[in-house]
Image 1 (cartoon, rainbow, N blue to C red):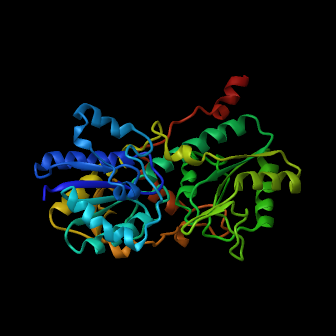
Image 2 (cartoon, rainbow, N blue to C red):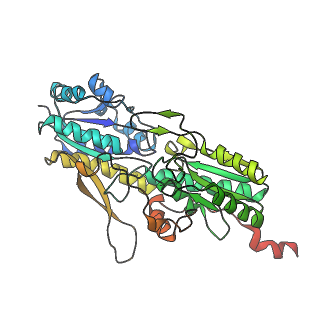
Amino acid sequence: MEDNVLVIHGGGPTPVINASLYGVIEQAVESGGVGKVYGALGGTKGVLEEDFFDLLQIPERERKLLLQTPASAIGSSRFALEDGDYARMPGVFRKYGIKYVLLNGGNGTMDTCGKIDKACGGGMKVVGIPKTIDNDIAVTDHTPGYGSAARYLAGTVHEVGEDVRSLPIHVCIVEAMGRNAGWLTAASVLARRKKGDAPHLIYLPERPFNEEEFLEDVKAIYDRQGQAVVVASEGLREADGNPVVEPIFRTERAVYYGDVSSYLASLVVRRLGIKARGEKPGICGRASIPWQSEADLQEAVLAGREALRAAMEGCSGMMIGFRRKESSGGEYNVETFRVPIEEVMMYEKTLPDEYINDRGNDVTEAFARWCRPLLGGEIPEFICLDKYKKEIRR
C-alpha cells in the first residue's frame, strides 16, 4: 500500500469547497507520509470509472488558486450509488494504493461516506469533510460554505434594499436557496443596519406559509414606506405541507421547486394591485468569490487539514465538526472535533424556534448574533443622506 489519498466531492459546490481540497493537499505535503493525493473527477462516478488525477502534480503556486476558485475544481455529482457500487470500491482503492478516502459534501455525501466506510471494513480510513451552503448538517455548529453564501445573500439584499428605497414604487421578492432549512434565508437579516432597512420580511420553510398574512404584512409595510423587500425560501410550504409552488422536478433525494419569488410577486400584483418583481440569485450565491467570507475560507482549509490528519491517525467513519469556544473577550473562535458519521447521515438540521419570531415573518436577534461572525466581517456600508437632509436643505 502506497498510503495515497483520494478526495471525492459530492453535491452542490460552495465558494470554499476548493479551499478544503487545498487544505487536504497542504496537510498531505507537510505530513511527508502520503504518496499521491488523487481527486476523483466527477464525484463518486469518477471512483467507479477510476477517473483520478494526482493533485500533487499541480505546481505549488498554482495550487493556491484553489482558494479563490469557484465551483468544484475536480467536479462533483449526485450519482445514485447501488449496493454493488459500494462493494466495488475497496477493490478500486486497493488498485491505486489508496489508504485514506475523504468525502467532502452535505447530508447525502455523509451518508455515502458512512456506507463506503462500512464497505471497506477497516481496510481504508474514510473521513467526511462537511460542506453545504444550507448549513443543515447535524451536530456541527455550522458548515464550511454557509458563511460565504450567507455573506453573498446579506450583501445582495443590502444592495437591492438601497435600489428599492431610492425608487420606492414596488415590492421586491428575493428568493433564497435552502429547500428544507432556512439558515441561508435567515442570514439576509444581516443586511440591516438601521430601522427600516431591508429585508422587511423574511419567510422560512420551518413555518407554514400563510398567503393572507403575507399579503397583510406586505401591504402594511408598503403603506408605511412606499416599498418593501421580502426574502423568501425556495422551500416555502403551506400548512398542509404542500409546497407553495408546484415542484418542477423530483429525484429520489430531492424536490426542485418552481419560482417562488415570481409566484409571490404575482400574488402581490393580483391581490394588492402593487407593482412587484421577483429576484432569484440561485447558484450565484454558491459560486461568488468576491463575496467569499474570510472566516469561512479559513475554516474550510482547516476542515480539509483535519480530515486528513484524523485519517492518518487511524480514525474512520468520522466527520470533522466545528464548535464555538468560550473566550473572555467574547470574540468568535472555533475548534474542530470528530463526529461519528452515523450521527450525521441523511439528517437535516433546521432552524430552531428561538431563532424565528412569533408571526413567522422574521428572525430574532439571537439568530443575528449567532450568524454574524460567520460572514467574516461587516458587509460594505453605504452612505445615508437622511441625517444630512436638514443641513443640505438649508
